[in-house]
Image 1 (cartoon, helix red, strand yellow):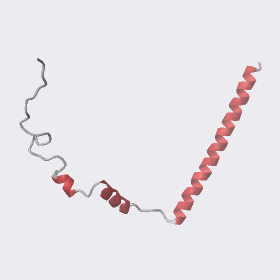
Image 2 (tube, helix red, strand yellow):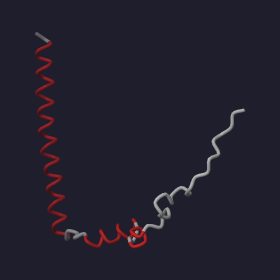
Image 3 (cartoon, one colour):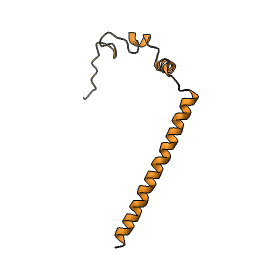
Image 4 (spheres, one colour):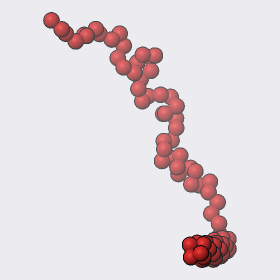
Length: 87
């Protein structure tokens, strides 16, 4: 007759090295995930209104310039392919 192994474990899971699961000293001392997030948010130095405006203008200007460059490359490529296929 086949039976399952019923050998008893000498120690319950998690106590193999004499430690309780979830009761580590480090975990009790740490503030937890959200406490750490809150602490990190306090360290952030937010830019002032003038700096935010400067950076926003720079982003918009660079986006417009890149859009124009991509449009020119697209126009040249489209007409180049059209020229080569019409020969």
